[in-house]
Image 1: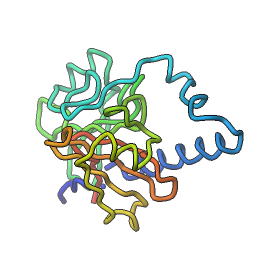
Image 2: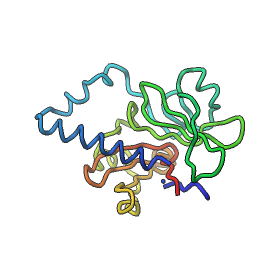
Image 3: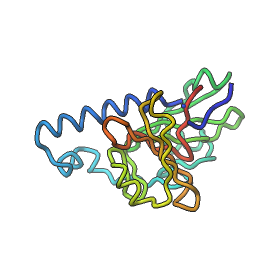
Image 4: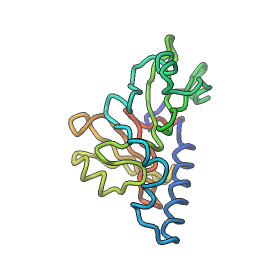
Length: 188
């Protein structure tokens, strides 16, 4: 089976959406402002930058062993079972949240990065609205084909619009729940 650029972290996206929705709903009930939510422990550490090349020190194409030695990635784990034999992934280490998919060939290299927290792209991070995405990336294209199956609208930023980045926007909360470089991997 082939790895489709639109489904490995579908569960992560949906769980991130649930966490984000839960945090947003409780903050709204408590009357807390966005500034108060942003001043939680993650605000103590500077946000990492998401670019078309990677996230912080984790770059697409970088060797797993090098990133692991630098303390940027967790241990190697089995990847998506549907993507074929010997697929591997690794979690991002703090302050980043998310995971990377690795190539099937050796030496293992970063193929995709999925961020669920700790980084922003042009000021757009987890919890941003569609309007904020459009403002930061005027050439963004929204793809609604995944709304029924995954409950996500995918926002694709082209190379000439700021880099190959894809954002998942939850259809219920209408907030960004996951950011992928160069795309959000889904297993099919």
